[in-house]
Length: 173
Image 1 (tube, helix red, strand yellow):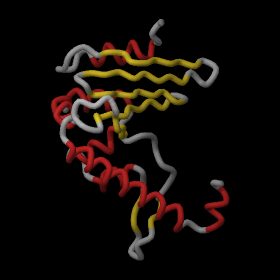
Image 2 (cartoon, one colour; image 1 turned 90 degrees about the vertical axis):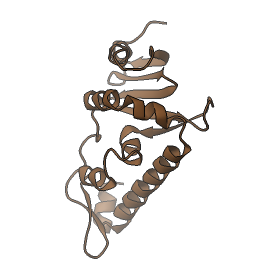
Image 3 (cartoon, rainbow, N blue to C red; image 1 turned 135 degrees about the horizontal axis):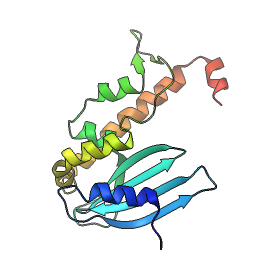
């Protein structure tokens, strides 16, 4: 199996982390579909899924469902960053340009930007805080916290979508 340049680049970056050697689990590249790529890599028993979707490059972190398990729960890096206290939920909501009005409605100030962590920034954040991520893999409180953050974000988005005028909803349908 040949390795895509996307996966090779990430493997090089991960090899500079404090952990062990990264292990490529799977790698896909589809030139027909905008050059989309995905690489799943394990480093220090932390599962990392890197995606290039039409040039939008993101990473999700997979933690074992229970310590030592081969079943992983996966969250975007920014969800774990909130659960681990690196950033606040308000920072994440502000990035996605959602705000609550005085009446409790959620409104969008403008079109949402790209991901909270672009891939280069995500790699730098992960490298700086790698020991936190490795420790998180065996901490059920982190998984619970990430689930709660994900639930809060989902509720905010649903509230936002349901509170929009019907004309705006129809325009996005």
